View 1 (cartoon, rainbow, N blue to C red):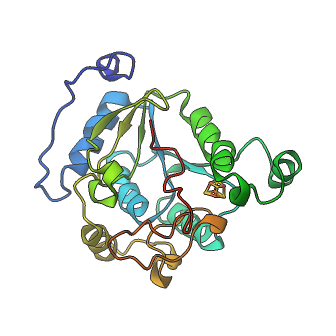
View 2: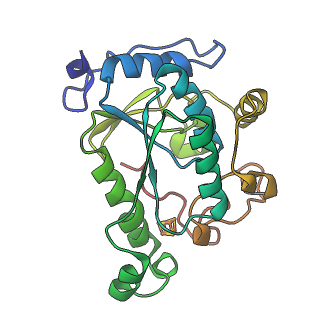
Amino acid sequence: MADLYTYENWSDTFPEFDSEDETKGALSALQWAYDTYGDSIIYASSFGIEGIVLIDLISKVKKDAEIVFLDTGVHFKETYEVIDAIKERFPDLRIRMKKPDLTLAEQAEKHGDELWKSQPNLCCQIRKIIPLRESLAPYDAWISGLRREQSESRANTNYFNKDEKFKKVKVCPLIHWSWKEVWRYVYKHDLPYNKLHDQGYPSIGCEPCTAPAYNVDDLRSGRWAGTQKVECGLHES
Ligand code: SF4
């Protein structure tokens, strides 16, 4: 069955789901995705607030789902703390910490110190994009927590997307969720979350590239603040 729904055999026959139901179609999309891909699907999580919702929903469908975290080596300590809390709350999940080939010291030696300042795109390539490509290699599909309202570039995201960058099917169950709905779900289910969210950081990435966001209309404005960069490149084709 999965053959019909791979990147290589892409067709526009993916099912649609009721975006008005309790989880705005997310649970149905996940159920369908795990039924279809079996063990050939992985969730790449940053353990941000959308990630916490997704993990709870995924665990209802597949308790021992595989999750990969791109461990760049420069995350906030609060991010590692929430990963530990999630492991405790969902002990059956298989969470893998994927590190880049280059250590920070090796990267500094090869490309200069603080590459995130001098060449952030190269830094993201080394510490995020290549590790994600390696992580996704054995799978047909991956899950992402993108929401349509997050940015213009995400406004046309569907439940199932042809991911030209990684040549996979990208499953985005939360496309119809609003920021408020994400938080309502987290509070309702008393889920652990990154404490930096309470300190003005709506979107949390690597420490050197994440600042509090003061623009309520752009919750990602704290990412690479003061530069032209707005995405790490994981979701660009
Ligand atoms: Fe490097 Fe910053 Fe990208 Fe993290 S977000 S990989 S530190 S440039």
